[in-house]
Length: 327
Ligand code: PBG
View 1 (cartoon, protein in one colour):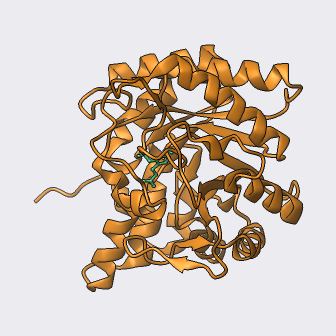
View 2 (tube, rainbow, N blue to C red):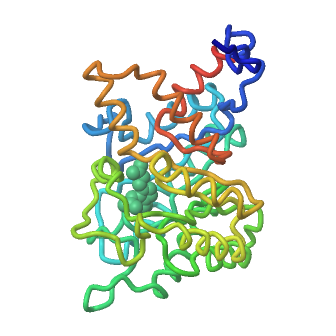
């Protein structure tokens, strides 16, 4: 019988020593909470496939934003659900469109106490549900979409947003958005680029949350889940075009991508723990199959460990509370 000389278990023997050597801590300030606001609602409404997440009314959104700030979250990412849609997604550019109104509401309520962010994409506003404008034969047209994104960016900046999140995966979108913001005098508005965004089935519940009109899929603009090198190319382009942060989405099934992106760039890396990731855990927990809070924190820790310094998650507010008790 030989005994080990080296015993890694010594550093696991009690909570104090484990805490001392813990390599990864998630800080509430690194969490961003996505929020949905629906035009015309007078009361917030539950989203069946995203238990605990709401479609907000303008009023309830303001209150939720204050609660998020009190919980210490680093940012709020706003998504708008318009009452009406059209082929060009004009509600995204209209200063009175629901997303632009919501930006104004939230900024008036919380000011600079957290980073107010907005989704910069047409899919919530188009009657066909695609992230861009269509050609007469129904293809998603890159360059006319860029012109719409430029206008949308300026409208969001005029509403007071601090950071825009172009998420439509059109080629050149970051450069066009950056130039439009600069030309309109919004040099200080930053760009969180959805640099790496896969055509993922994990977005299912989000499509319910925004009442997406999409039929078909987004595979001509979002990436093939099989590809990693392509992500590094996307990230390099976005950094060259002026992205202030780059994001990988989804998060947990793509931790190898998060890690490779972290190694490839020196801007902050974000990851979006998307609706399907959240819904799977909530559903399993509701069945009593897993410990909800432990799994929640384990997923966030893993995403951070892989290299994401900022995490978008529907659990942000609750997780911030749990993390505060823990450390
Ligand atoms: C596009 C957008 C989507 C998500 C965030 N921004 C949907 C899509 O690409 O189909 C998904 C987020 C989630 O699933 O939580 N505006």
